[in-house]
Image (cartoon, rainbow, N blue to C red; front, side):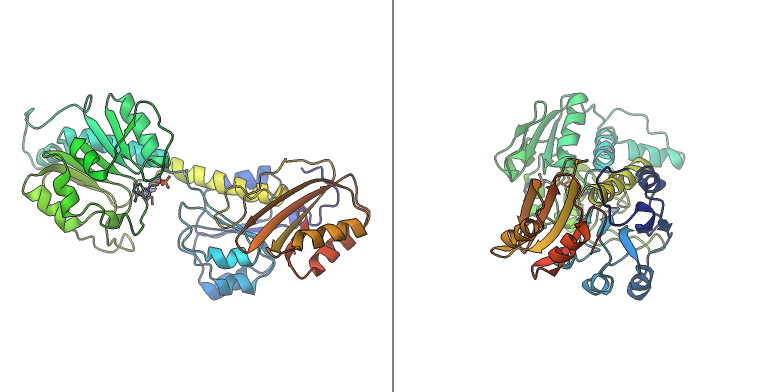
Length: 417
Ligand SMILES: NC(=O)c1ccc[n+]([C@@H]2O[C@H](COP(=O)([O-])OP(=O)(O)OC[C@H]3O[C@@H](n4cnc5c(N)ncnc54)[C@H](O)[C@@H]3O)[C@@H](O)[C@H]2O)c1
């Protein structure tokens, strides 16, 4: 429990609403931190139902199916923060949330390892032609032959996008004896012996297998078009566990059909079924030595458990301490966990003189400031002030901060405007 005086809302009154069957690990983490007022639903909610359900809720947890629009956020001013228990945050209007002083948290690294592991497995399966042999065995054919099968030791892996997943994959691949090269458009810390390539074509021409780990952007859309695929080494392999738009599937099918490429593993597609009940159709179906998976690169039980813990921890840190590290739409402030005095938190409009007006409030009430943390990000500023010891008139101070025209929200620790 926090040692800060005058917490404005006791933890049992701070309500969490968790939708879409969020993992049990989130509830355990909240409970350990003293937050037991948690309602969980297995389903997503549409806009009207969500607004009704959010009445009195301070913290909302969603996965990918609940859409949190500007209108939803405006309708429930008590909402303090939203946790997206997912990697992406497209399901919430993060800009609107920022303007309203609501940080949005997510879990960008929780499935990194899962994708990297699948990719390593696919490299081995492709080089050994395991899937064609397995499919043959399932229908009674005994294809015992070493032709076209090789070890991955000593082969060159080319990684496009040396971020969280790409760099994790590089470490695993080197441990398997591969030589690793990568291409990234920003300067990256190199792990192990991985060496950067100067251009995409240089990487493609030098790699026995190319694995894509870039996000979807204008620059990466159709990055692997017909020309790029033809620039790959003859007889090499392509793996796409990143985003469907990065590869021209028709051009890939052509390169596989005429034998320029020896195989591929594809987990993401330009168009994917919206549910398990819908049919999946792709030009790659039936092609030799092609592994097709239904966008499950990051889908493991461990990743779901980590997502639950990671996002719950960020919400707890924001509620208990005011830290915004890991918010996708907010100034990032990392705070010491238990200051000895009273902590005031203000989200303000980023206007000239706003910080001065806030400090005037503290001067007027003769509050001695021990520490101040301040970050701005576009149109908002995030201010945390630790006052020395107890502040007898703390409620009046908060009221005066809330009266400032530039204040979006203000609280003393757990009190949220
Ligand atoms: N298949 C799945 O289930 C699954 C799961 C998780 C993530 N993903 C996808 O994997 C991809 C990588 O995820 P991550 O967490 O490693 O992301 P990341 O942001 O950590 O890494 C992406 C890297 O790509 C680089 N990059 C961006 N544009 C580039 C360009 N034009 N040329 C070269 N490099 C470029 C960035 O600098 C960054 O280093 C994302 O597209 C993500 O959506 C898929």
